[in-house]
Length: 192
Image (cartoon, rainbow, N blue to C red; front, top):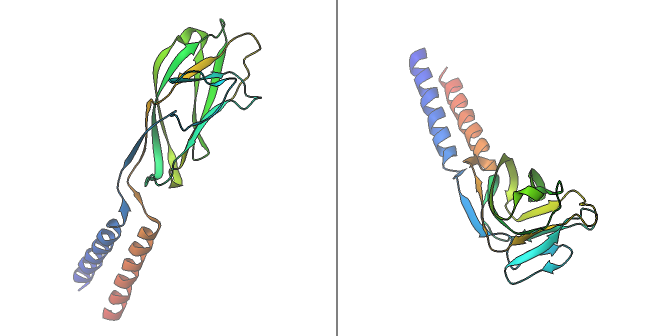
């Protein structure tokens, strides 16, 4: 009798878990261009040409490039892939521009560009704990001050970026699972 009851509990628990699993957010990726022509740019000049923005070198001025996105449909972001094009690098020997990378206002990592980094594409990859809510903003914020006369950098526009999530449960998933287990417990108590 106990073996049959145990099989019933396990079967019901698996059914409840499968029902809960139908409410999982499946892994997804949101692709976009960043920085883009619609990005908000704070820098010493802003738009340098049709293809680049800059000059970035000052935390005190609030140098940054940011953009908001509406209706991305991506919830619980856990990773960011970012391609940046440094189009101009006039940093003096030993100088660097250091940045914070923010997803939905959450600092997910850093990057730095030095005098010896030259120009060209760089690929950045960040993995982080799930950020609640829908992906809606990305920002690169300068976090140091390059001393006057020691240069700056510029970034190209319309490089590729993507934000992804892992398979994560929606908030009601745990509720479905617990409700299923509660029903199983009640059925077993009535049988006993």
